[in-house]
Image 1 (cartoon, rainbow over the protein chains, first blue to last red):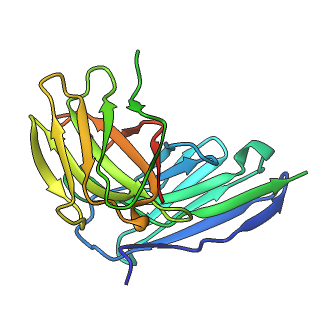
Image 2: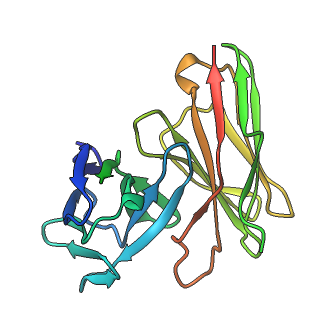
Length: 109
Length: 115
């Protein structure tokens, strides 16, 4: 079983749509959780950290369920500029980040 | 504020050769981590350096080795290159004793093609 699993997609949605990405992780000792965004042929960039209580940053909402070892990212009112690969990331031990394979999102006019 | 820099940006090598990739961390950071990202996959952790020592290592063979210099910059060396080593190599920097040391900033990467 992979340490971090994501639906690779691709997700193709129209502008203005709401889209949700899901992720599961296997290491119950993991302490920190993140969503990174990666544009084509670029480096990953931190989109948001994920906290147990859930957190929101503008159009983006992240949720964490430790009991189910499940993380989600919700994007509301999708923009063309949201098109990218979204990487679910878990911190299983000090300093090490474990990435999922990424979910491809394409937002079309 | 200088971000993470990596060199070279692209590299072509043949099987069996050796390669050295370089990384300078973000200003104020003291820790460098290296990741390998194959096409269509997420980055995979290779190792992390702090205080010029390898602190953690992922599931990579001994052909992959590294070094950190007193100025915190780092090198990744890969010996006896295989076709499967073709990938984007990412360097990430962080501050070891920061409140959230897992927050890492990535450089633009080095694209390695092994023929």
